[in-house]
Image 1 (cartoon, rainbow, N blue to C red):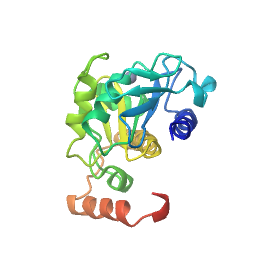
Image 2: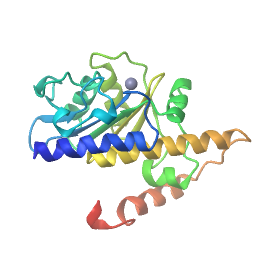
Image 3: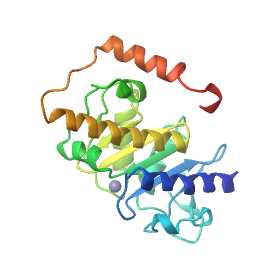
Image 4: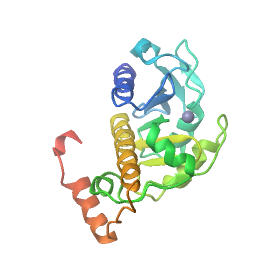
Length: 219
Ligand SMILES: [Zn+2]
């Protein structure tokens, strides 16, 4: 089980590169080990080309290294906090993707002005508090902002994006979509004020996308 998850999480890091969400080593994916108080995460400072399933480390939900020869990502405490407080979450992603981080730098939520946003995020993409790395502050900010919110993405102020999902792949998808809509809404802003979508329409788009769209067996 852990071997398979390590492989999946290793492979998903390539998607961060493919979708241009990361520079150097600044971005990471983690996944909860089903049925255990453990998760796997990227080792710190290892370039994406050098990542192997064996190099992905295993941590407990307090962020302590349980298995692996490398130090875990410096964002491990934030991931661990999310897994401790959001039992429905099985995947967490962090990036400093350009357009989303530009919104975070202004401390501004991305308004829901695209049907694709209503589909994936069910409304605005919210902003979380400013928090320093190391302790529980980032994790706390993520959990407080996303609890009771439809959005699987939060823009941590002056920092970057954290996304959550029912699987590591779902969290990666949210990170890709977050950057995509952050870019489009930014471009839209250049020539005027984007038009909001009515709340009722956001609700029906979200409901259709979450419950009807796609191949059910591939959720
Ligand atoms: Zn960061």
